[in-house]
Image (cartoon, rainbow, N blue to C red; front, side, top):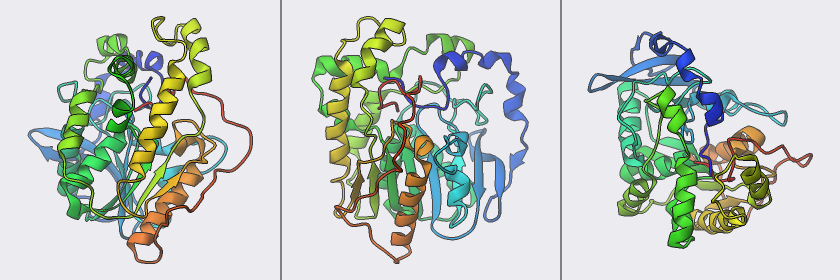
Length: 344
């Protein structure tokens, strides 16, 4: 399973063609307390991280991308809807950021590098330092995709007073490991982490993760407090795609032909568990989408964010059993970076 960024690992292999100085072009940022902002923020320890914020209003929405996904991940959309970042800025303040090692197109990350592989716990510490240093007031609504979902949940458990709502977009969770046999998980973990040898050779700072340690950090965290939660799950299965991907060399030859169906079943169980984390959570399963729901069905994600924001403001409350359905129409084509439907 490939873990989500905005481009395939093959495309990322050209990173060294762009001078690293491009990542350092922005000046050091001063506190971003209000107004539109885009720049580097000093997070301590001699490191800076890229942050972009737009719009006004409370609560502030913080967008957390999947593995190797930058802030730009929320500015990409297909033909079926608006881009998430600017659309959310229409009704409240919204911020997105780059974790270290998350390329922007073919350019290196705009955030200073850290040792890799990293963990969800380290990402939580970085995000907390970033929002604090930038002067962005909480509590926040966290909107988190794939591996970012693990970061968002761990942040909410670690800093419960700083999070007022959650939207999980086909999130990676420890429930995936729980739903598979040890042998299946060995294969799954390899696919999640991906064969990044070529990418790392070109760009040593590329984000990689220790999945098992991250899951263990999540298990050791306190349970979520009661808050508005919407879980969006992909409904386009990965199972039928795997044999052709093995034949084409996109997936390793030793991956079982039926492994896509194994992943689909395990992910379904994992997503259902996420929707039971708090009372009255809403689980949206009819998304007409693959793993990257925020790109394939951005309006659906924007609507979910709006509902949680309004719930936090006291206007509404998401109710279990409500149904939200993505616009009908032609199924978007599968993406090479979305090999399992469960990229992180």
